[in-house]
Length: 354
Image 1 (cartoon, rainbow, N blue to C red):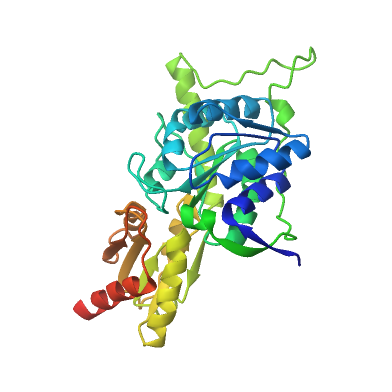
Image 2 (cartoon, one colour):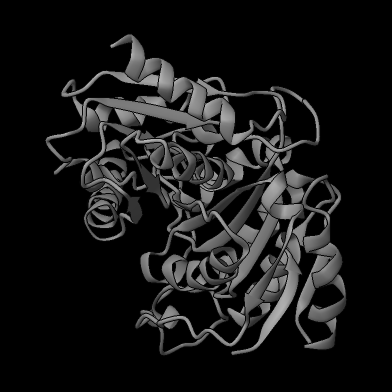
């Protein structure tokens, strides 16, 4: 075991190098700036491509070009920068192009602030580009998971030929924790990119075109149906989540990322005082882990969705619960991070009022 004390953003950059990232295109924005700063030095040393683009829009279009040529490619940004990339993300999905996108979320809307937030949930899971498309999204809750998921994301992106987003907030990006860098990530068998990547003219190969434009509506519908088939496969195979103390819980908190860490601290205190509380922690934001809600304990009476937003994931929680239990909400906005006692107070209020 080889543990290194790493800031979250540094873990992202180190994991990208270990995951085989060939090229990075990005633009500075707080609170993710350590990612390009780190990569600007070490990618050059390894003979790989690092380029600071003139804008987020330019960066995501460079990602499109490099991915189309078969490179393992990554970009990173924070909330308003990810918003600027939405058209390019839609193009990547429409062209079946793999890449890794890291979003270190900050408060909004608009320019907002530079403190941590989870208010990009809609943007991550619903998208801001046009058309029927999906982005696979992972939400780690500590730096070890972040280090591992970034590496895994490159394989998953290549396996499905689809963008993968790593969704963290500014707190995870800036905090430091020991990371076991010796951990080996299970590799997937990746389809040969030589069947589709534009790697140069070869008279023995069929012509390859990277494209998301289909002027014939019948062809476009067929293309969409192929995408839907892929998304259905992802939904079936890639849901990830963890559960804690569900066996006897009356209140089940649903939270991800930083909010899940706070919820676990709250749960530890509550259970010491006799309150039966558990946690469902979604790891994939899309595909949302509906399977986690299929066999809830008979003791469960209430669901509490906790987010660093005004309430976005709560929509997916309600879909997952499908009316079986009442769903309550607790959230903080604008970069404000709650204490565990705030969540505990909400849980006590729910249980005592009912």
